[in-house]
Amino acid sequence: MNVLLLGSGGREHALGWKLAQSDNLTKLYIAPGNAGTEQIGTNVDINPNDFASVKNFVRENQIEMVVVGPEEPLVKGIKDFFLNDPFIAHIPVVGPGKDGAQLEGSKEFAKEFMAKHNIPTARYLSVNSDNIEDGYDFLEKLEAPYVLKADGLAAGKGVLILNDIDEAKTELRAMLGGKFGDAGNTVVIEEFLSGIELSVFVLTDGHSYLILPEAKDYKRIGENDTGLNTGGMGAVSPVPFADEKFMEKVNDRIVRPTVEGLKEDKITYKGFIFIGLMNVNGEPYVIEYNIRMGDPETEVVIPRIKNDLLDLFNAVVSGNLKNRHIEIDDDTVTTVMLVSGGYPGSYVKGKKITGLDKVSDCIVFHAGTKRSGDEVVTAGGRVIAISAKGKNKDEALKVSYRNAEIIDFEGKYYRKDIGFDLK
Ligand code: AMP
Ligand code: GLY
Image 1 (spheres, rainbow, N blue to C red):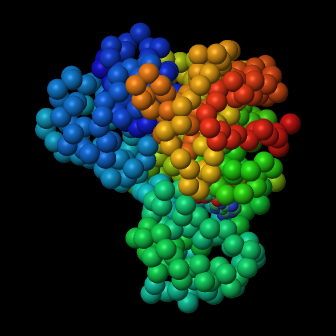
Image 2 (tube, protein in one colour; image 1 turned 30 degrees about the vertical axis):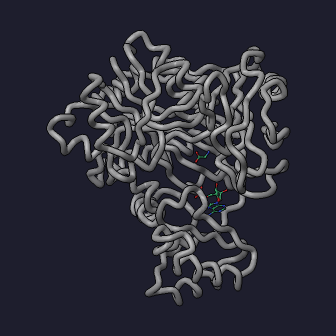
């Protein structure tokens, strides 16, 4: 099979790395990819949001499946674009249509969906400029800290957590006034949930589903979870507190009702569901849905899956997932993200990366890199994820960190405490 994978991050390198191991793969193309994905397939210079160019490429290269890595093309309706065009309607796309993509594309939609299907989540009120007074009243009823979420996609920046009620009211006005552009025309105000976070991944064909290995992501730039939010500085899988009992609650109260809720609402969903959870004293609550895999979670989840990923994707698009079982490696996989100095603020790109040929016992997933002549250079804030396997978290982290010292570029930074809060 010829497969086109859309995206350019560590997530796509990890998905591509796994697809490339399938006996059924003929050619793998990655659009636009990075300096890592060119080692496992062919990079194509196409923007995943340029659907017309994607279509032309698919037709000219006998592509038989499109796998969508990031959320943006899905929220913009790439699946519907394919289904509505007779020339490409027969080519399966792994990922939801525009309707299902609302789970991530609109926080208000996601909250209404959870309320309707009795899925545990924080109490909330959705406000816009017409009912801002209701928003103030709701804030008064909550206790600090206050959570404000821009309804639409805001490049991961649309969530504010504020300790002071006056500040929360001021920020609410600013968001409704355009602080995050149109994404903030509606704002979801939420009760703050106190606990430990966990990422749960589901692959569904719209009827059956598989729960993939769970992971814990470290989102803050600084050690001990301090400083600004990032896309993710490292990850660990499995997560010790996600034991059988906890995961049973997650399945019964969240995963099954989500897949059945989508079906009930006549939303055909074939793809990944990433559930961001809070474990509040042993009880799971949904913080957010994403309609794609996480990054850097993919870099620890995928190496633990023993199945042929292309076979799973074929089962997803043909509706045969009920005939598949997930096989998971018991080992722990960790990843440590090397980032550009200054990230998540401003940083310089184009720095030469050295040591890539000197690493050992790990998988180097490229996130923000590109080739420049004979060199590989930095091309983003998050540059490289170093994944390693071990009998436990400490063994795996030792290898990730040993190699984190070997790969180098000017301004390199990484957190040295990934996994610090897990036993
Ligand atoms: P989101 O974009 O919805 O994942 O929010 C970003 C981060 O904000 C999450 O990963 C949580 O750490 C935090 N967060 C979001 N909602 C809540 C909440 N209701 N209670 C506590 N923390 C939250
Ligand atoms: N690592 C969090 C995310 O991918 O959204």
